[in-house]
Length: 378
Image (cartoon, rainbow, N blue to C red; front, side, top):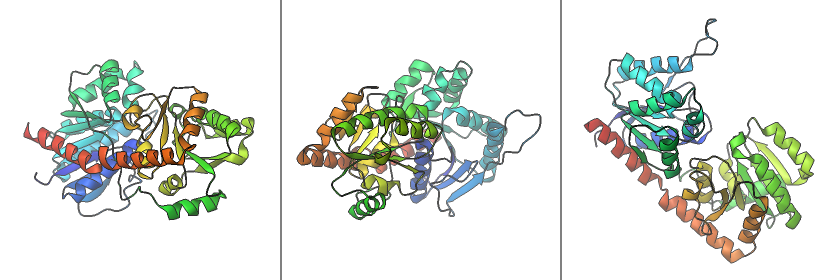
């Protein structure tokens, strides 16, 4: 296909949507397209700029009349400017609200017919779609888009159930950069020395933004029950609004020597390589990008039977699926997974295979290129 000028609108933070948007943009640039990130800050995964990877900052200025900073209005203004200055061919926005809305306004301001591709990532549907004050806005953003994709079949179903847009939605799964996530035995040894773990000690890991939906309370309660059966350690990686509560919970449970709060780390791959099992027990999850990151490092995952998680975790092959709020089920799943070295090695192989084949980056980037090509032919 011809080389395109692609505008990318996403959150620049460490969440899954920003990671996928940035990695997709970088992959498109590697294929010869020019990619323009239009965000309030440079995305944290966008470490290098080049002639065909550019960053256009959204300046948000305060004004005493406004009760809140007008991010979405400033974003629409910047989108309109970049459409014109860079002769963009297509806009790819991640999240219906506010980004699809801002893109629609920016397109109109630029007096342009540029196609808009919107990718739904989860909370823009499962949380905002349940709010009366925003539900119709989410629907409008989807219906004004020229093409809409969702990161899982579960999210696609939830979108029609909660939002009921009059628009087709395609499923394109998330992916990871396999040059960034892979098995590394040296990293395993190094991190275990850092935390004082013996090579044979069982290490669990949880990585998230510590929001309520990630159910870090469930993770800790389950781990406390695991400790009654077997000595183990838990790495809690990340930071967020529930961090203080989780620190209190650890003290209340009396498991301080075995729980290690790492905070935000840039070496998540190293921490994954040092771990044996991931606990991912969310009560809402459209996909779970960190599950793929764990798989690529050979770490099986225990996840809840919600959202898109069962589309990533194949029960009894690369991980285990457990119900919500069933701590004993987590204990059984975890201990039975590691009790047999042969079984555990099989789970590891399947985890790596899943990351490298089913969700290989080339398949997903190809799919998005076809979407761009289709909307430009209309």
